[in-house]
Image 1 (spheres, rainbow, N blue to C red):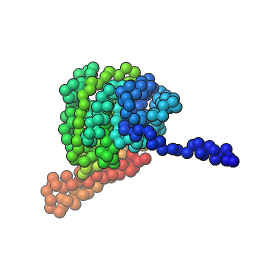
Image 2 (tube, rainbow, N blue to C red):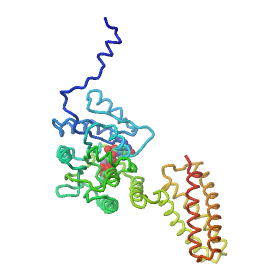
Image 3 (cartoon, helix red, strand yellow):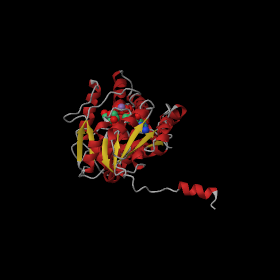
Image 4 (cartoon, helix red, strand yellow):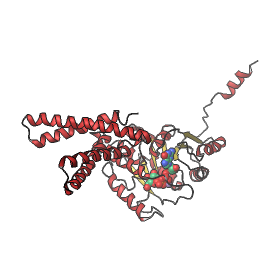
Length: 378
Ligand code: GDD
Ligand code: MN
């Protein structure tokens, strides 16, 4: 006789089913507040995929509308469907990466969960990938494709972003901004560790982080209009894109954050000069003009760095005030080291401009390094 627990153990033993067709495609769907779309996503995929064996992985960032709970309801009756629910995290690219890493098929499709991408071209995309393409992109910009009903501003923005992307792409792609593509697991694994995982541009990130010679093919489709829910593309997403471009260009030599910090510093210099000019125009003493300009420029740099350079550690409320004070302290010490170093260089018979640049550089690196660990710690 066997005990009840042994019996259960026997029943629950995982059996490899040799008669089951092997999995061909993992479909990763990033979703945030898409409760009104997830059911339909599963349906349209079933219609499109025919007899292909595939799995569906939704990656949700703890949407307040209950997207994850809805997906779990579907998953109860449909073993093809799974949910990755991340808590305390946001971001399209990082969501896609986590979904891909949780998947099993030799090819992965990435698609929006708002039905804007045309799932009917998936079988064709998969076939091209199985025939040897590393990446197959669903494209709005080749013959037969279209952006659908976008307004002129959004189209112009997209075209401009596409132009910029050629800076970091290893090969020509008509629609590198596409969030709709099929990638081989090998290609994904070759690039995923170098991705920044920030922002919206996961395809671009993967392409810019992978091998130099890749076979990219494109299949046209028409971008649909969103029926339910709303777009999450905002200024933060655009900033994320700027960051990705920096990271993949000069970022290889200098940290992207420092490039951003230095750019803000450049703007701060302009503000400084404007304030000095204003005071001088009203016949104030130079020391007064220079002092006020310094105070204003540091506050300006602080605010801008807080929303751009350190947006992931953004300070608010009392923390903002405390941060401002600490930034003043950091920058005064930075200015002192600037003047000190410049003096030493100057006294060693280098030209005044060499001395000045050396001072500014030392000051900038000091401000960056110290404010990173003091002002925007955590
Ligand atoms: N998990 C997660 N976390 N999902 C997100 C997040 C997030 O922070 N932000 C957006 N998503 C999901 C949305 O729920 C949707 O399924 C998909 O990502 C695309 O987001 P939308 O907000 O609908 O973007 P869009 O339609 O404006 O932008 C589309 O077009 C761009 C090209 O112009 C997307 O396909 C982009 O990937 C694409 O670059
Ligand atoms: Mn959308």
